[in-house]
Image (cartoon, chains in turn blue, orange, green, purple):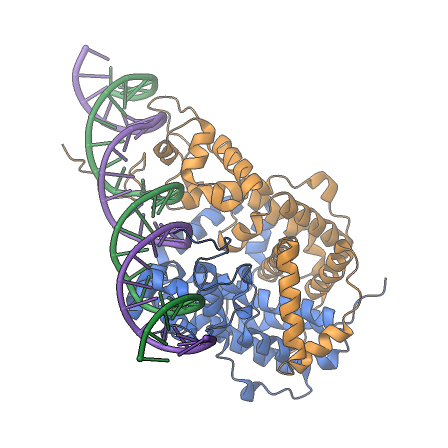
Length: 245
Length: 245
DNA sequence: CCTTCTCTAGGTACAGCGTACGTAGAAGCG
DNA sequence: CGCTTCTACGTACGCTGTACCTAGAGAAGG
């Protein structure tokens, strides 16, 4: 006899009108067989695959196979693939070392330290920027990070909303920088092709400021110095009081 | 008889070792039948679909159908799907109105004007931030934009490399803001669910700074004011000379 | 302790994706 | 005119996410 339950966002154990947000769903209700896996173990398996082969490789089928489970079994734990991405994001941001990040009152130094840890995170999990940019980062670990950022920026005197905006700018810059690093590491042939194309474009006469920019660029320097310079600029943006209007 | 050509990135008219960058490939070599479409018309069709239904809807099959062509015909114009994305990105950034953006010497005002045009672009093409973040923006129109940005920031005295970094920060911030606006527009049910979840998290005691941030947030205000405030902060970051080291 | 209900496991199948391979014909070159 | 290059596009493959369904584990209640 066909089910008379109204449709929900998934057919798995979900009451009618189950919340979309996975963080609002209980991991388990207590009845039925004991599950063989957990959100944590599923996220860990997915993170491992994504670390090794890229985010696209972490398909539902691949993650299930890594766990020795059926593909459709995962849908007992996450309503849809996008929720797996949310679990992965939160699993990665669990790695912050808050002991090493205790606020000192020196905002600039505290934010620089935080930025370096975030870049480290992105380097260990190259797929993380794509999720920070596209998924709402509001799992328990992500909120822990948010809370920490708000603590570190308390001395700025900015109100809560402005500090949230500053956090978005900060995270966005670091993720973007990490993705830039990754594309720089893509391959010698591609880099040579790219440089060749841009050089030719600069010499074409159609982009005079581009040509001049190439001419005035300083030596590239090591990656962390470039990151420090740019991060410092972002931190300045955060710390500078708004111009009067 | 099987082809004896060595493999290339696509089986379509591509010499052995054809460049990966579409901008390095001629649109046509002059021989063979006259093509029924062009990169411009294909990009326009894809942009129209993406504007109406989102980036994922602009599949090779859908774009081909919109043009009345076979799916595999598109591969005469682009080696792979990712090159179609590059054409779409460049088609969108062709919309800048450089007459209205002529540099005045007032960097702050010039950048604010540019930022507003870019936000407008992202509002008309909601899929654009995802491509700006994930694709190299180096087509002819994108280089035109880059050149303009370099012109506008010439008075800062920054060298070329620093101004390119500043542009990445500027573009990244605006794209991220546009995506934030889009998620804010996602739906009343989702917003209510999200606010409910964050309120509960703030009240849980586990995130004291989050609770305080909610308490001290000013009234939301209209979207353009929020954007202006945040954009101004980014522009400050660009215009501030680096701190001595 | 038995019955009922809820939940977990996971197979099957569907619809769609990107694209390799192949054939046929248009058109330029010598 | 013959040869080569290029365009059109169908077929088919491997992969994706997930709806639907059945079977059995196990908790709740009587």
